[in-house]
Image 1: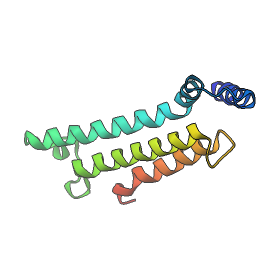
Image 2: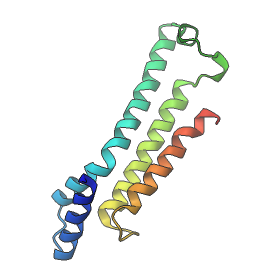
Image 3: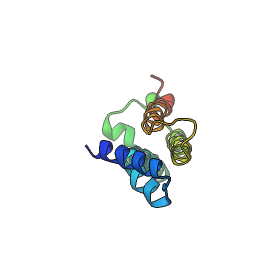
Image 4: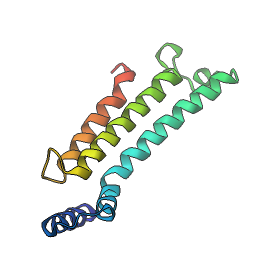
Length: 124
């Protein structure tokens, strides 16, 4: 419902020719808030793993993980930064309305690409 309202408001503002920064920011938080929070959680998880390794706590044994299959903090944080790059790129394309006229193409493509960026270091 919120997404439909944002799309209608964006289309009406585009027809009027009055797409200001406020209109773009009001619409974009609907589509981009959840992936940014996911990337933030992913990045903070990498920092958590780094701190555990820095203080020599064996989190893998404590949580019952296999040491060979656990990710390094560098791999976790690099995938989070790559996901933030994907989000920033698609947010830029969303704000300038290029190359898509439809408002939902850029966020949909961003969700799909972000998912693939997150599963790359997981050896799925």
